[in-house]
Image (tube, rainbow, N blue to C red; front, side, top):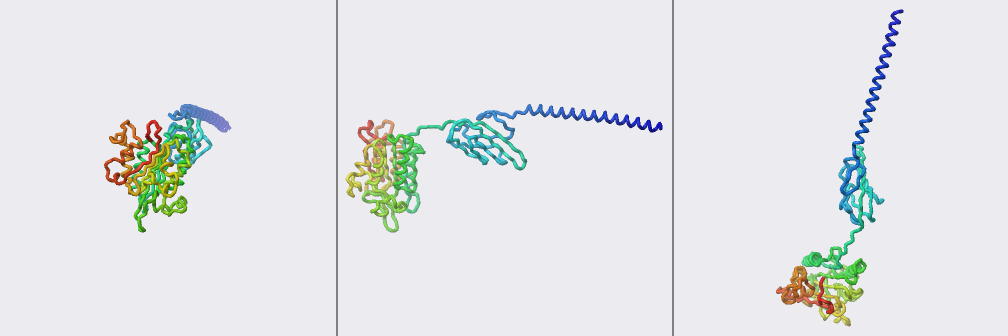
Amino acid sequence: MQDLQSRSVFQHHLNTRLAILYQEHMRKIATALILFVLVFVYLAGCIDFSRTDTNSTPSNKPSGVDFTWSPQNPSMVNWIQFKSNLGEGYHYWDFGDGTRSAKDAPMHRYLKSGEFNVTLKIYNPDSGNNFSCTKKMCVAERETSVLPNKWAIMCVKWRCDGSQGYAYKDYAKTRQTIVEKLGFPEDHIFDFENEFFNKDNIIKALNTIKSSDACWENATIVICLFAHGSESLAGGTICTSGGRVSHSFLVDHPQNLPPAQPSNIILWDYELKEILDNYTLASQKVLVVISACESGCFAAQDTSGILHGETDSLYTSCGGPNRIIISITTAPLDGFWKVFQQHFWVEGLGEGKGDTNPINGNNDGKTSIEEAWFYCKTCEDPFIQAMQPCMNDQYPAENPEGEMFL
């Protein structure tokens, strides 16, 4: 009996001791948990989820994801390039103006100015991670710059065999001089390559100029026409006569041909007159240069308009006030484009040699069309002497300077 009582007392003492140990153990665990939570909260409070970019306001985002845009100070309508610093994962862009993109490096433009919150979200399916970054972008009003009111219509036709030949060399050099030396904006150049005297193109370009924001009445317009005036073909030689420039490729645009004329006619001089007569060009500066063999009738008095019974010729009407028409040859002579473009465009106008020409130059620091043309015509070049370029200068004498400056 005494043994049973002793065993019962021992069991009670053991249970009491175990209960005390359990309570102390749980208290330590609770204390550890409390300490863990406190440490976690403390560390979380030390993490800064915001940073300031040079091109944005502070934004909430975890470290590791970022994006940039170029240009850094964008304006409306202009295209903006967005790039993320993470190449992996699926990209989802929200540009803040109601448009989105799933491209890695999208291009976007805003149609309104203002502040936009741009958000990039990236999901990596391999790791299962999601990243997000938001920045504020300021889009300025559209940049408005007043371009010079200078326009050029450049029409060129390659050779019959499809090769560019000297046509492109003359065309390219002329175009380069017009843009780089004479200050014609690239946006104001109409390039009609391998389409030549398609009248629809010329009319379309003139309509575009007239409907632009520029002042139509004060526009400076240059029309350059380049073509092979004559070509040696298997069936014989197609050449110009009676004031027309011919080319076998006319079949490309039969709708632009005079109905009763042969299919190899490109453009009669009185047709050019009719095109310009449909526009009120009296107050504009208009320069027309025809680079083609046997094209002199465009600028000479014996035009095809007179030859075909027209009462007012190109010389007296198309070459009206403020207009100058230049043909690189006197009919029926052959011409050499590279010679004319070098002496007239590159040297005469581009390098200003027309102004310093001792024969006709004014030496006043600026070169007129007349000075460049006289420099070209009187230079000691056997090809120029053989071509004898001609000019119909109807630029008004009442102009204070009496000359045309582009």
